Figure 1 (cartoon, rainbow, N blue to C red):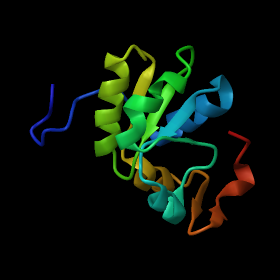
Figure 2: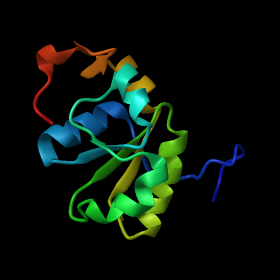
Figure 3: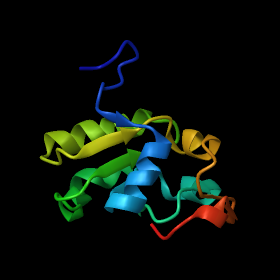
Length: 124
């Protein structure tokens, strides 16, 4: 069911909780932005599948671990989360606020090719 802006209402996770679950439980982050968007701001270690290709490549995603879907602000990832859940990926959550919220939470990211906040980053 969509909210008043037409965005699907889906299960969500905040960036800090997502990062902790990636580090401690092997959760996977799926970035559904376009490739050129990753050049500007990216979360390290994500699996990149542009939203337009998600239907074709979802079969390659693991069904036995948590999937956190991210985009720029959380809108495209909400649609992707809705699709993945409908496709049987029940352990899928939308990462609230997207990479904008991720960077604001001061978690590790790459900005224009430069690593930021990597002093506490572990391998994802």
